[in-house]
Image (cartoon, rainbow, N blue to C red; front, side):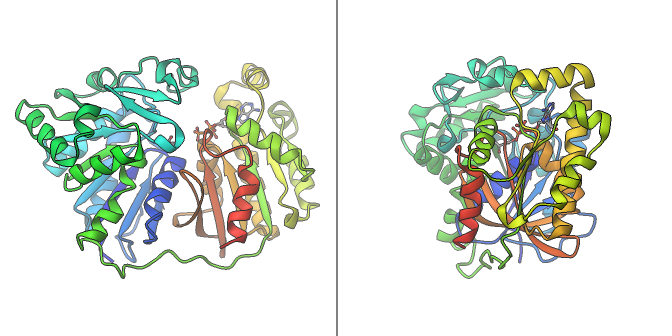
Length: 423
Ligand SMILES: Nc1ncnc2c1ncn2[C@@H]1O[C@H](COP(=O)(O)OP(=O)(O)OP(=O)(O)O)[C@@H](O)[C@H]1O
Ligand SMILES: O=C(O)[C@@H](O)C(=O)CO
């Protein structure tokens, strides 16, 4: 069917996050890994293109995003959503601002909004300042992110150096007055030449007001949550037909593999919870992998009963990660782990795994590529921002979930399996 909303995300787990929140509506959401080579066919009402552009050079990110926009326009979309991280991860050079300005130029629009708030995951914006739980962004663990350390919490100050046109704020006091007041404020800012408007939101009810006010903008930008109300709004006014195709869940076997390459605080807790249940587990050591390669892990995997949902993980505490990085380099350690988890994913699929659970954004990119996955349909949600997806891999239909490092609760790996059992 004709695509109603065309979305572009700057990383893979971010793309499944957005797709999962749109899929809460029950309508089919399709996710493409990279810009498809072929012209659009069998498109869904909501199409999400996952890029890996968050920390790419600015020119590369802009070029790729423009190509994604073209593909979505060919699919029929007239409204677009640019998804970045709910913690506004970007370098000083970009890429959030330059990409937004390029999309605005291509769409011939002179204003967009910025709303990374995701209240269900503790991300709120007040007076233009982004909070992670109770901490300002720049005091949260994001201040030490290896690639995109966030050292300022003020979104206007973060955006201004990344763009050429004025930046402004529609604050919570306006949002609290409702969608007409917000629309009015946006018009007034537009009349003053403000092209980039940060919009405050601390609760889902704010996001509903913002979506209502901005639904007809050619381009909205934000975290996933501000897009969540859009399907219901499109259904209510008939833009989206009530009999648009629904998400379908295939029946798949229970053979499962869990692969974790994220070292976030939350993933460390999730791995600790899962391994404490006596589930078969294999811990990858990057230094041993550098010396002996992945064979030991693959041999271990070949002997496992996949119905017990074994886990292979490199997840480790910050000291161990630093020790590996000192010897192998940050990129070197990452690549060895990603290559091994990718090889394990393929081996597990070939051994019969039809449920694949992956933790970590970079890890998800590597595993998805190794599994040859290009298109995913979004299924049931496990935790806010983490859905199951269904896709083809090596001639098999599989269920795949890609968990962002910080998302999910401690019991995520068991929650994921229980969710699928209940479908
Ligand atoms: N023990 C380890 N030592 C060094 N590097 C590791 C180790 N375990 C994993 N890594 C690497 O750390 C990186 C983790 O990044 P990844 O994006 O997968 O997780 P994340 O940052 O927690 O997730 P997200 O991007 O969703 O927040 C990967 O490149 C992975 O290969
Ligand atoms: O918005 C978020 O926090 C996530 O979807 C994300 O972008 C993970 O990298």
